[in-house]
Length: 431
Ligand code: NSS
Image 1 (cartoon, rainbow, N blue to C red):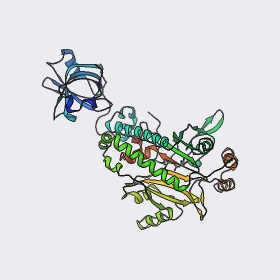
Image 2: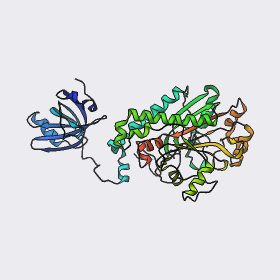
Image 3: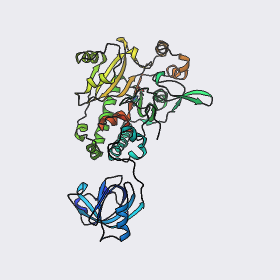
Image 4: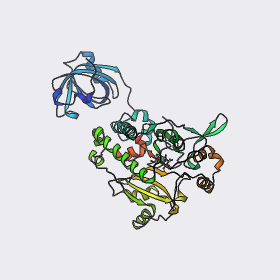
């Protein structure tokens, strides 16, 4: 008989059937000749009642002795039991310990810093496991959505020679004696790829030397980026909202258990529905001022502003038409109002804030050279990128979605670090 996933045993029809499971000890206690050992596998937890009279003597002694996280194989009969977690238990006929674990360093009420030091063990927790499964489904759904729209998945480089999002958050390193950087965004490379593939996306790590500690910044995060030839700003916003809605629906359908464990009602996600509300930057500034923010036209929104804008919303919303001065050189200017650009942020509701940054791209060579100079960059550093405007330039648009930002909102996580197994934040690269 093969080992069975625990989740497959937690149903009425299994009552009285034989079970063979393996996992790790999640909880354990013994009383009056019975060891109650709760086992955890990747799917669920299940209590095993190991009775002294039902198993060989040595196995009972092992069941009493084995500590948390010991690796165990159990055979027995499934019984309904209202007192057991999940409503079922296994009455063991065999209990084999594969490895006796040492005393597990994690117990209740430990500090966040300590839990980060033992992150390699803490990722076994049920909450982090649930968030990891949601993230896997988010990535799978994103790929499925791009595929349904005829996009090609591509593999842009992570070692790069220039900035995409400005120099202040670049990590540099010695690359065969020359300075090189870790990529902040695949955008410029995706732009190069549209001339052959037209619709492209990439899911890659992006790196940002974020010098402050916040609940929504990582130094290394997974970036879901798309770029499409001939797509205008309107088409871009539609694509973004449909992508977000599709991902939310897939996660609600496939990960309902995990969402509930994390405190998210899956029906919240099923209600996410385009079109999302749109606010021009200027309107957003007045709204914020009315709500008491000190933000002025020309300021970038901080986390607090985004919270004010979204805390009472249940749907994501777009902020569009930002002032040129606060946005990257590659965003196309609004010809009706040349101080503004066709850029957008998509903000998650309930106070979570920005999850996407996107824009229609400037496709005119002269204009983009001018913008580079304005922001203090030397167009010579972007020669290859400018070639894209010399040879067959067409209107195009694209965006970047932060996977952990999205997972944070979907899973209602307090801190973005729990949307990734080994978070990289300021001063931490261990474990
Ligand atoms: O800087 S962005 O707003 N835009 C870009 O990088 C574009 N070059 C993307 C593109 O058009 N292809 O970042 C995009 C998203 C942003 O909305 C966040 O969701 C996420 O990337 N992001 C981050 N997530 C986690 N940690 C940090 N530090 C972070 N920075 C951005």
